[in-house]
Image (cartoon, rainbow, N blue to C red; front, side, top):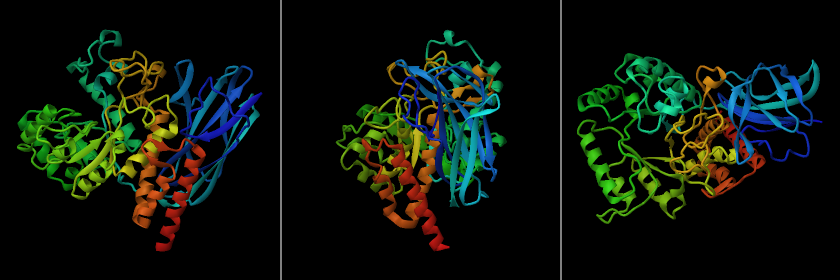
Length: 500
């Protein structure tokens, strides 16, 4: 028995879980121009098979696609798919185990509207063992080249160095504050950092910290790049150096519109709020017109009597509440009022909140990762902040152990890690994950929602409300999500055709 079934790219077909009762060998994908969209093809065999080939047998329109091999990480005895490796062309099947490939299609500005059918086959010694057909329906509109939804994601320098073969071995690192980027490896590390930065940019994600010092002429290419939505100005430099970097960015209005500073993280007491305000007041003497951002997860009362939101709104330009904060009655309305006055609103997650909220954990349904951006957009957030994409500090092998925040808990998997180091498999750079694919797809969905708002106003929110009526009330059905998303794209296409 050899089984084959297709499913959404964000669906995680776990090893050790039940397989579908019926095969599904045809699948429909919808995409705008200049968008990524994909699906998962899963196989199951009741016998060992070796040297199987997965090949494209028809692609008349020449649609661009990439095939990834899904790697599984065991959590409580269940194999959860997440890391994605380049597909080598052949694969082996073990009796009773699921094997999965992720097919990612990419449209461009020239891709024709309508249906594009791509067919694939599994060959055993040249004989077809299974055949599948994927129809990619392309809408007659493009996503913007310049993203509207902002992102700010950090990279863990120490983790990159250690898991790229630089610096000391993992077993020699004990303190998370240790710095392993010594002068003798700095140049080589900078090259690695650039690869990871550029890689995430392909996923519509702007990394906090350019590959080059802002004063370096090579940084200008990044500052000019319209796909980069945010530029982080680090306040760690001395005052003179900080002012030089600030002045350079301020000299160009486009650059300056992307710039933000983030000097204080997650204040949650009255004393911490005072410390934060004092720090930013001092920085404003050097960088007076900079945007200052802050992520936070509480709404404590300051000793002045003001609550945290009112207190911070006096000096914070980018307010970034954790996702669960939107569950508080009236909180969204207060933020929207601040947004209308000129404040920026972002949102974030980290090692919490857990269920019933959505997050980016490895062992949660993949639809959660994509719906998270829909929820944030509905709540009024204009951007997403994430504390790290390469936090492997406390795992000797991220490909096997993704309990990344063991100093907090060993029961949270994948927090602060959206990428995998390729060194283990001879890859010079990062490997993506199912979660990263879903996050990028959610960001692209958000661009469609923004387009819809411009065309039909608040009616666009009804598409979100059919899937999620709040941050703890949302669908778990991939079919329902794909259906609503297709209706959204069809509506945008129809409204644009009216204008034409």
